[in-house]
Length: 447
Image 1: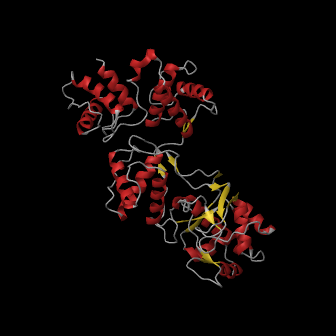
Image 2: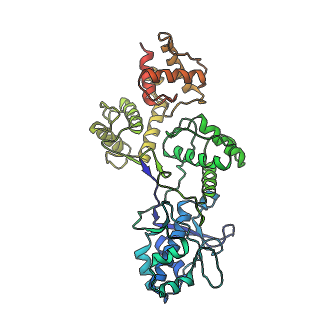
Image 3: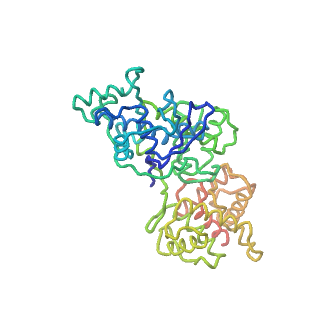
């Protein structure tokens, strides 16, 4: 399983003005950004504990914006603004102070969390003299520090006793939540799980959106209906497909209903940020991802002599490692023997290319190949028609199968037949056709 925990970014993109103001965007190192804001808003002569508490607040505020993609989910191409009216004061080419720079160098990968929430807390603050607000008072921290309070005690004074510090968070390059491709019927993996999780929560506030019961991360008909209703409510093209615009609108509404960028946030628990599929598969791993990987590796190896065709099952074995390394070398990927999410995308693309350029002598074999996505209720097209033909061949000798109409529509009758086959041959009974069930149906159709 993969947990989407916050990452401290190497760089952050700042809009030099209010969100809708015509101003340039600049990308700067995250530590430079924090030092700049701290120098713009704090006095270097303040007590050290006051400076530390404020740096925690500044860092957490920025990370909350980044982690929730607050501005990117609104269609902007930046992470935060330089306007204190909306965010924090940032001065391009502004001067900083040595003592503040040293503190930021020690503290930049620590942030504030509240209770059992995992997102960086929205540490709202103001100067406490010219402006006051709910949250931290910057000048007030000076008085508390002079009373001998620690940085954490100061933060608890303003944000509550359930505040704590997450230390030594991972640092890395930011990757946007949107996976870079449209998501629709038959797709699976963590992006689908994220869509389903978000829409389930959004449906509590917008009950017209159908509640999604599926938890396996496959984009099924139920998910498509929920996406269509969401698109209708929020004025998007009603396609049932999650493109970039739909993805980020879902993200924005989810963040809003949970108040993830608010002092009084509903919060995000580790369980909610834990997804079924790992970001990397390695020796000893098992499950649907491994089965999926094996199917495509085997199909690729069938026609490519540079990739050995070895026996595989549902476990990532030494055979898998050998085949993965050969595939990675062939397609100029890092040769690790482990498979990453980006490797899977390359593998799928290679598989699609083979399907479109199959040698003439293998044309009969083409129809037997899995189409590289899950078939589920509501799916239509030639791939469904191909599957239904195999299913019809089985129905002719196995009268216990409900039946099928070869019409290219994955309808109720097709789903009933699929569930009966899953029941008979030990598959999970979900009415969804993945690579292993497809292979089994092709095999049974030849009897």
